[in-house]
Amino acid sequence: MRSTMRWGGVAVAAVVAVGLLTRSATARQWTEEMFLDKPSAGRPFIAAAGGDLAHAHSVIGAVRFYQAQPKDTFLDIARYYGLGYNELEEANPGVDPWVPAAGRLIQLPTEWVLPEAEHNGVVVNIPEMRLYYFRPSAAGTVTVTTYPVGLGRDDWRTPQGKFKITQKDVNPTWVLPESIKAEHRRDGKPAPDFIAGGDPDNPLGRHRLRLSLPLYGIHGTDIPWGVGMQVSHGCVRLYPEDIERLFPTVPIGTPGQFVYQPVKVGARGGRVYLEVHKDIYDQVPGMYREAVRQIDQRGWGEVVDRARVERAVLEQSGVPIDITRDADVDEVQDETLRSRTQRAPGPATASTRQPAAVRRTTE
Image (cartoon, rainbow, N blue to C red; front, top):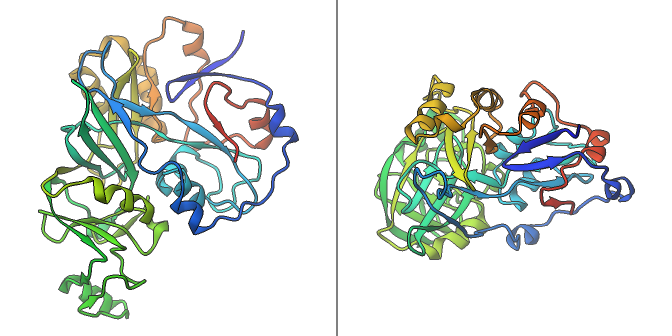
């Protein structure tokens, strides 16, 4: 019997990847120009919300795979493929993020369940560390673009709440709040009153969207590697190339919302998906209960496999997992979801069990 696994909503079968065995690995020399011209930035998706399982389309994108090359790090791979460091680390437990073995398959979690919020304007899901921008499309649908972000560290948490875009600035001057200047003094760092726009040390980068929430904004960064990490004083940081694409598309007055949803449930093609992230601010004590609540709220409880729900919650991979109760019992029994304590497959395993029905990237 062939063992089949459903991962990210795509059925994948074990195959012999001859190409990986014969392909020679050469070190990629990552450059800033490669990131600025990356094809992944700002890719639009079409989505449709609703509780009708037959018509709901609240899962976008598709999981892909990348073959690690010498000198790769998760920081470079994540940035090039439009991901945050956190997303790549969660999806590949056990893989060394600084020295992934050459030839190892790295799962690119470029598939997302949309957050439970009004699909209008900007929505930032805090534990996911990802921004979604919704615009009206054809009747009953929306166009979605999505970007990874860096957010507030634990002692400067990014708040929940609604806001509007009130101002747009190019090369903004950063006026340091007294609280941040006091922190800099305690840490022995310079504490100027402001840092001029265009200064390479300006943490706002080249573009800023001011928010109606005082002291908070959506902007670029002078430290791209902080995207997908809790490194800011509460503001939302994007890769420079991502904010450059987002900035001109968001008009003043656009509504927005910060939400906190480590658990997301969605549907596509009549199937139900569950995406679970780490509870970075410890706001949701019962992750399984929250998953069940969302499933039952949509009326999908009768079509999901509770064992799959439990495993997805345990794993917290940040990847949408197909939790639909399958008529094919063998597929359900053969499915294996990696525990976070297990190591990901090594190069030898990857070369003989490479997912074939998923779009592969071996650049």
